[in-house]
Image (cartoon, rainbow, N blue to C red; front, top):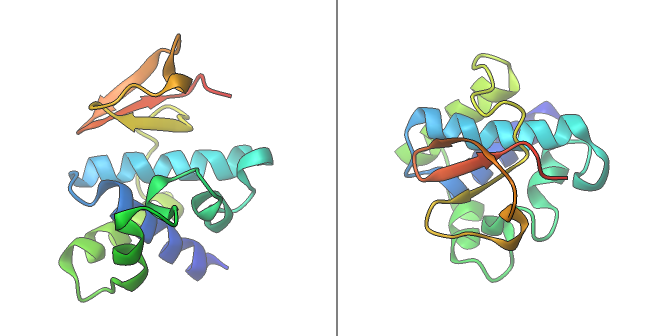
Length: 133
């Protein structure tokens, strides 16, 4: 199961944050790990949290990134970096830089769920929240 979680997390990071720094990739990875650790509605495993419909847009059927993330492999340097970030998060090699955040969005949008919420931090182009239920 660990292998599947690492692969799925790497693909999620690739779909959501491949253009970010290593720190930005780690931050997105920790959001997934935080959801899996909280469990419940999001799921109790990383694979489940990533692929649950409408949680991470890159996995949505209509998202242009979906085809890319399904077909990429470690020969792609960007995916190899995402895989390294996934390993670092799952194996605890990098601390949580988003203070338990379970949500984020790009700074280019302001989703309804973020109204009245207070961001924990911004890393790269993402804004992170730990007060969303």
